[in-house]
Every structure is written in structure tokens, then in C-alpha cells.
Image (cartoon, rainbow, N blue to C red; front, side):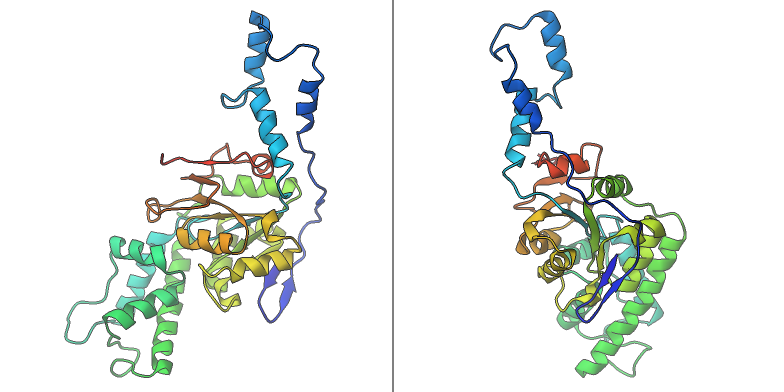
Length: 330
């Protein structure tokens, strides 16, 4: 796996894998063309039964093969990239609780007010919808509502250096609390994530994670929820502090494609928000959405498939053959 930053690349040896391109199923279309019976002939009861067996989710074999044949005209998929927070872990409430714990620890108050700063579920959902990264959220909030008093500094911060120091301290404490939540063992990976990861590896795809979270937080989450073996099997891992711009800027995904040695259009990204979708599409990649409670009502223009969880219909084969589409909300 590559732990990637702009300044250096670190390789972690993972298990050897064969990256040979998987066998596509387009040959089934040829077999239909060679059939001695025209497809329009009147089917016997036995033929009807056989044809029902050969359908996939109510789609006739002819339609199924047409989908696969159409996939042959698309770029060959070579990489699957996961976002972390919201995709591997439904983390919004954990992060929100971590920030509120940090505000309490540092006695964060606005001047002239007795109550501590605290972010509600609704307010944090709003932040999630247009800002990626915790430090950006806090800086935006304090710029808008006023920089607070705290027990970290004497008086409200005035210089950019003082503001940055406060933000860093709040983020560090929040990260500690977040890791304690994860370490409790009561937080599972989202449904289907580990299964799909294993399928993608077995199919010879390159697999990685591109997260807006800090490197330490993302590594802790991934190793606890997916296991050290899966983490080390990743071909690439890029965190928010490895890149100069956060999502929705596409730089994190552009760097991922470059480091993986593939074209952007050969990558499929799984994201949970409009911000992540914009980053993936901005880099020229395919993207599907597994939304969360916070992002369910967002618009996802250009997403191939929009769903709540990675159910059994989302397989490596389906992704590689361009068979995923639709919005479960409609």
C-alpha cells in the first residue's frame, strides 16, 4: 500500500496479488446469436421455465447481455476507491460528539454568554453538507459567529497564529475522543464494505481509500473497523493532511489516479456526500453514493447509483460491467 503525501510516498508491503483483467461475460451475447432458434419464436412451457432461470433481476438474458456488451465500450475499470467517514463508517454523530466534548474540555464560550458552544445534530448536518474537514468547519463557524474565549488562551484569539493554535488544539482533543469511541468496539463498519473490499481484491482491482480526515484519525478508523490485514492490502491511502486542498477540490483523487498508475476514468469512487461526489467527478472518475442520515436529502447529479448501503447487488462484477444505476430514494 502507498501512504501518499505530496512530499513522499511510503510503500507498505501487502500480500501479492494478481492484477490480471477479469474475464468479461460479453461472450454470452455471441452464444445467443449462434442459437438455432430465433429469439422471437413461441416458447414452450419448458423454454419459458429455462428463460426465467436465465433472467437477472427481472431483466431478460438478451437485455442482460446488451448491458454487458455496452460495458465493453466503456473504459476498463481498474481501481476502486473508498471515502472513509460516511462510507466505511457512519461517523457524523461520533464526530459531532467529539467536537462538543472538545468545546467543553477547553471551555469554549462566546464573549458575553454563559453557555458553552455546542453543535446540534441539525447544525452539524448543515456543516457536513458544504464543508469537508473538521478544521475548516471550526474556522468557518468562528469566523461567522465570533472567535471564542477559552481556557487554552488568554482572551479570544486575534492573530491568525493564535486562531490556528486554538483550532489545532480543539481538533487534537476531538481526535482523541473520536478514537476512544472507535476503540470501544461498539462501532461497526457500514454494511457491505468489507465484503466488497475482498471481492475487489480478488477480482484484481487496485483498492484504496481517500479521506478528508487527518491521517492519524483515518488510519485508526480503518485498522479498527476493517482490520490491519485489509489496511496493509490497500494499494493507496491518502488523508486530508496529505493534500493542499480538501474535497470538493478534486486534487486528492487526481493524486490517487497518478499514484495508482491508472486513468481517472478507470476508477470508481464510493462517496456519501455531494462534496465527495464533486471531488470524484471533478477528477474525471465514476462515482456511486451510499448516503447517510446527514446526506440523504442531498442532490447527487452524475452519480451512477444512489443507495443507503452496499447491499448484495453491489458486487465487483457489477461495478466492472457497468451494471449499477438508479436512485433508491425514487
